[in-house]
Structures are given as structure tokens and as C-alpha cells.
Amino acid sequence: MIRGIEAAAEAGASLVILRIDTPGGLDSAMRDMVKSILAAPLPVVGYVAPSGARAASAGTYILYATHIAAMAPGTNLGAATPVQMGTPGPPSLPQARDERREDGGGSEGEGGEGEVRDGKGKGADAPASPQPGTAMERKVINDAVAYIQGLAELRGRNAAWAEKAVREGASLPASAALELGVIDLVADSREDLLAALDGREVTVGDRGLTLATEGVALHEHAVDWRSEFLAVITNPNIAYLLMLAGIYGLLIEFYNPGVGLPGVVGAVSLLLAMYAFQVLPVSYAGLGLILLGVALMAAEAFAPSFGILGLGGIVAFVVGSIMLMDTELPAYQVALPMIIAITVFSAGLLIFALGMLARSRSRALVSGVERLLGQRAVVQRSEGSDAYVWLDGELWHARGDVDLAPEDEVEVTAVDGLTVEVRKTGGRATDV
Image (cartoon, rainbow, N blue to C red; front, side):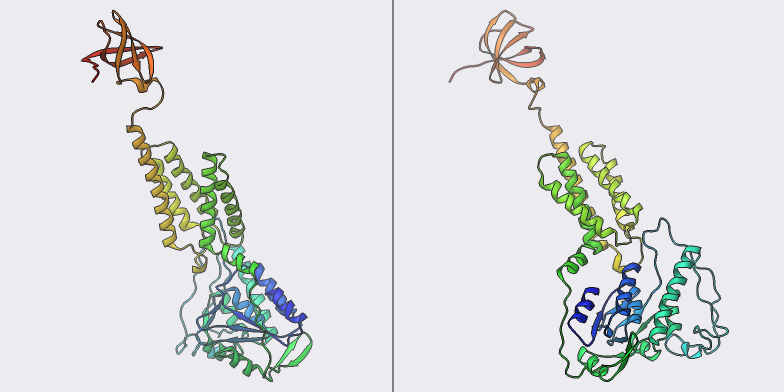
């Protein structure tokens, strides 16, 4: 967005229409974007579109910062309460507050705002806003309130509702936002927006400008490939898959060194996942449980414990996946069907590995002298109880408990160094 505004200014554009549809994002990124809008040498029009879009959380601050705020019908803004990301523990509950209202108090967007009597949008007997429970939370909330109120005062918009959006997470549809002075206009399409902007006066820096948008040429500034790529890998579901691909790839490489491909793919995937996690609300407890679950399932496959390690690994993996994103915002959650699918896949690999192990244990030995036990052989020559037998393509010295004769069939009962102990089976080899 910052590069787009700079390109528009260099090209001599008359204004920038910033189309907004976001569930929110990092505070630091939002403040960088707001600074770019405030410092822009040309008007920036914020337009929440198309219908069904939203300017939630950080998007509300950005919309307040624009010179002109517009929304399409069927859109909404608000829910601008800051949320701590990656906190080690659950946030504390808000302090109790009086829920009583004055007689005749209306709902939001109806009678409630019409009863505002002081500078902060509250009546004398209006209920107090919920206060965060810890000093750090209060600092974050108060800082956010002051920030968005400053933007509201700069653009002449409703500062009282802006505070409510931060402290209480309030939201508004487009029609109510226009009625309460939160935005400047509602437009069905970009053409309607340009028609409504024509002749409107705005202040850019210390200059007053009158917009002339009738018949203006439009240039679509598409999101570049870099931003598209970063948007893909920072999707919580994609980051989750990259992390698992990295873990499994490195595990395969460690257990089968020299292959190369799993290790390279795993290392690249894990680094991409780490980049994504730095901008996502990751719970390190959840991440630790996922790693523990994978380790336990791998341990079960290579050091069987009759399913104890495997079941524990599956439980740790599922719980860690659910806990991975430390926020209640739906846009930052890993999809539950994906968690279930990955868990079933991992459990299937575990069951397959255990099945292969069980089958291998039931097979006869194919290496070492132990594999000779129980095999049949034919005596080639004999000297009393000592004889030589043709066994597994080799001539072995044999010793039996009875005298052996050439062509006798015997069965190996033990191996003593280079001598096999045999017992006579009663048959004789014959040529046909």
C-alpha cells in the first residue's frame, strides 16, 4: 500500500482510492500504513468494498486516517480492540460494571447515541466502559483510544464511537456509520463513489483541494507478486502445513541420510513457516505440543511401545494444533477440518509403520546363522555320527545323535560355530 501511494504521487495522480477488506493485522504494520496516508501529498479515499467486505480492527484505524471514508452497502467496520498476540497466559477478565441503562435508552445506531451529552459520547448516567484487568492491558487500550481519537479529530469524524469501538469492540454497518458521522458517504460502486467525490473539498497537509473526478481516468494498481506471495504463506493454514512439511521432511532426512530432497524441502518449508509465524499470533505452548506430538509418533514408529507413545503423540498433536493460534479472531485460526485431516494422516502413517513392524516380526529370519534353524538338508558323506551336509548352498560339518548315512534327510536343530547339530527325519533323498 505504501509503495502504491508513492507510485501514484510520482505519476501525478489526483487522488488514491484505497479499497479495504480486512479482518485486521499487526499494530506496527497498521501504524506504518496510517503514517503513509497522513503524509501522502494527494488525497487518499478509503473505500470499504465490495459488499460483504469489512474494515475490522486495524482496518478501522486506517479508514479513520483517510481523507474521505466511504463504504459500500452491506459492509461493516469496528471491533478495534487491541488483542495481545502470543501471550504466555490467558488475558484477565474485564472488571465488573453496572449494566443498568436509563429508561428509554436506545440500542446502538438508534436512540443510544442520540442521548450523548458530554465530549466523550457518554451521558451522565451512561454505563462505564469495561476496563482491562492488568496495567499492561490498560496501557495498550488507552494508547489505542488516544490514537484513534486523534485520527477522528483530524478528519472531523465521530470520536466518541471510535472510543467505543476500541474499548468495547463495537461494530457498525455502513448505513449506521454514515448516520453517526463515522464515515463520509456510502457508494454502491466505484463509479458512484467518483460521482459523489466530484466537487468535494478536502485538506491535504496545509492545502485545501477541490476534487474533480468527473471523467477522470482510472489506473488499477494491482497487488504485486511479492505481497501476493507473502499473503499466501502468512495464511494460518498454509503456515501450519509448511511447518509440518518442514518437520516431516527433516525427520525423513535424519532417518535416511543422503537422500537430500526431503531435507532441502523440509528446511525451506520450515524457514517459510518461521517467517509466517513472526506475523501471526502463535502460542509457543501449542507449537511445543505439536513438536512433542510429532516426536512421540516418530518414536512409536522406530521404537514401538505397543501404542502408548503413538496415542500420546496424537493427543499432543491435536491439542497443540488447536492451541497454535493464540487468538479468538476467526481469520487467524487454523481450520479444524485441516487439523483433523493432518491428524488422521499422521495416525495413518503410525498405524502403517506398526503394521509393517508386526509383519516383519512374524517373518522368518533371512540373515545370520539363526536362519538355518529348522532347515532341511541332505547328508553328502558320513563317518559315524559325524557327517557333512549340503545346507544353503554350502557344505557344513554336521553332528547328529545317531549314525548318519549319505542321502539321509536331516533337520538343523542348533548351530555351534561351524558345526550344525541335526536330527534325522527318517527320509532319504532319491533321484527321479
